[in-house]
Length: 310
Image (cartoon, rainbow, N blue to C red; front, side, top):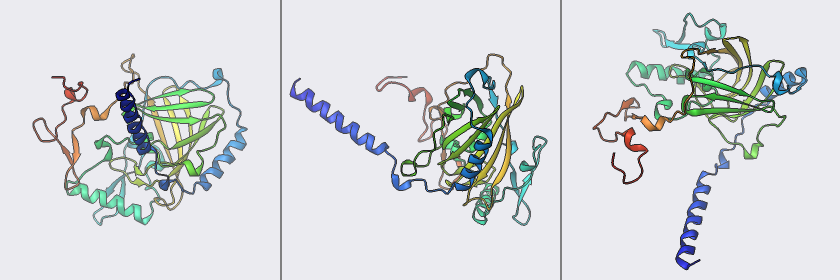
């Protein structure tokens, strides 16, 4: 090996090492959320179920393509005296979607501020900037979903930015606290209680339930009981714990509905950045950058090789 080649390889190794260091999470952001209440409830459910992993041929059939809906959330509006009220619709069949969540004063004020800004024409959602919806918002996304079940792990797949939740059902616990940090989809473990997948999720990033819904903090942790209740409906009964955003645990039910048209429907890889020209302007509002305007990203050029004319 000549010296120039050796130096080039050394430079590459140094660059690679620096890049890896930049990608290592800052453990100063270690998750310290107190999830003891939900963990105790989850362990009690696990003890009652006996935690007997089903054989592959005994798993329920969740095949197909499904979609969720934010309609199962309380949708907030402002009353004339700037109080939160809940919008109801025909799809709000559960009591949990007709009642305000037990928001803490801080997070109630945040929800009011968002609605007040919208009245002024200021409307921003981080998903518009190609940030993943994250969990628990994942549950109400109306994008297409698929579920892949095995005895030791279940993949809950959302078309939106190809978000995947991994639920480990092989008996492992959560990531050790000194190695944990906030994740878009959180850290999930679970077990099968007959045909019901019971999931405990912690280590989430803060976010909002939907554009018109309230926020949750990075302390949010959940228990889900997910099962197929008919050929065309999978139901997710979720209990939400969040000592910053909620005054007490909140139970809410979501449903995923089978999508049957077209019959050969497939979920595709979704790259939001490929065709995203939405930015947040100086007022905090959503601004669509149009062709010819400064900062416009031409999707035809984004995947072209360097120096390639399109």
